[in-house]
Structure formats: structure tokens, C-alpha cells
Amino acid sequence: MDRPGEQLAQSGKIRRAATPAEKMLDALDLPLTSGDLKVDAGLRALAEEVLYLRGQEARLHRALSFSEALADRDALCPVFNRRAFVREISREMALSRRHGSSLCLLYIDLDRFKLVNDRFGHATGDKALKSVCKLINSNIRETDIVGRLGGDEFGVILSHALRSDGEAKTTELTKLISDMVITAPDGRTGEPVSLGASCGIVQWDGRVSADALIAAADEAMYRSKTERRRTPK
Image (cartoon, rainbow, N blue to C red; front, top):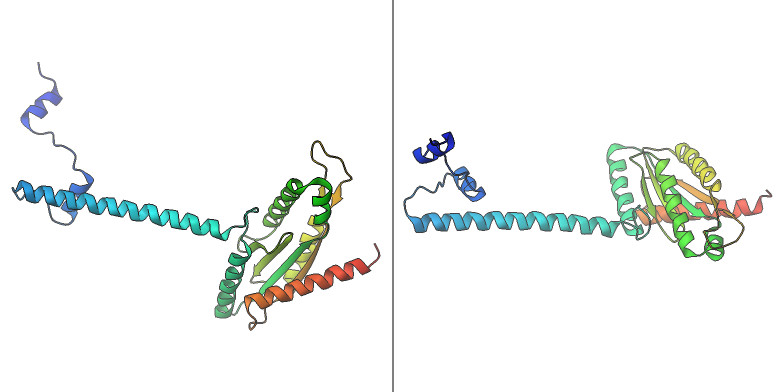
């Protein structure tokens, strides 16, 4: 006795599933029912080529997006590099101007990072930088933006923030970084190093450029570092 499936197959009630190319042709109201085998074959080949090119375009778009993301990221830390950070400041400035909102920039410089490298080596220094990035990212809002501006220098864009907000965040981050202690890795000796940080804070006045704002924050950081060195502990 024939099985049900065999009976349906013999009766012609089971149809082959349409290929993606055939589905596309049906959607374009170009079904393969002309009766001309050459025409049908040509339409099928054309549809398959279109689908292939669409796939190639999607793959190239993903590859481009990935490459752009890599180009924006710092080579060591999971934050923006300086070029991308300046672009993000310019973008935030445009939004701030459009919506009439405030914008602040923090400039953070690690105080004893060179000592970490000298005492424990660059591998430990790299780990310290990554730890600082993780600490900063963990203590800012999702809308804030972090970038590495130099070897041991970082910037933080605080959107919708007044200078008082920036000062509060500066105090918080300075305290957290000052509490970080870098110890000798396995196989090396040396006294632990307490990192410490100097921070500068500026509020955008709605006029200066992104580079000028960074320069102003850098200058504010330098003044803070100089003052801290002069103040007895």
C-alpha cells in the first residue's frame, strides 16, 4: 500500500518550495509561467544575480560599519580615540545649540602613571589605563562620552550639565582614581603606586570650537595639577 505522502506525490499535489529568486519574481509580478524556457531561465538568472548583489552590498555595509567603529576606537582602551572624541564634541555642541542645553567637558590627567611604567613595566601600565577607563565608564551616565586624548589623558563629555554638575563629577572621579593602587605584577618587585589624577572642568559658552574647548579644559587641568603640587598634604 502506498503511503499518504507517496499518494500525494503521485497525484501531483506536493509542490516544490519556491526558491528566493522565484519568490522575488512573484513579488515583482513576473512569475515563471511564460512557457518559454529561455525566458524563464533568463529571468531566474537575473533574479539570482540581483539577490547575490544585494547580499554583497549588505556584507560590504557591515564590513564598512565595523571598520568605521574600529577607526573610532582607541587602540588600547574601550573608548573613543582623540579624532573621534573631537567629532563627538562637535556633534554634542550642535545638539546643545539646537536645544539650548548646557555642555561641560572634563579633562583628566593621571598623576603618577609614568612611575607605574618605570617601576612595573608598560604591560602593567596598559592594564592600569584599562582599569581607569572601566572606572570612568562605570561612574558616568549612558549619555556621557569618554575619549582617550593622550597617553594618560582622558576627556569626558557631560551633556545637559552645568559647571556645578561637572565640578561634582570631577570631585567624584578624582577621588575614585586616587583610591586606585597599582601593585607589582608577578615576578616583579616594587612599592605599590597610588595613581591619583588632576582634572580640569570647563562649560561650553556656545561659541568656541571643539579643539578650543579641549585646550581650555587642558589648561584648567594643568592649573589644578600645579595648585595640588603647591598645596601641602
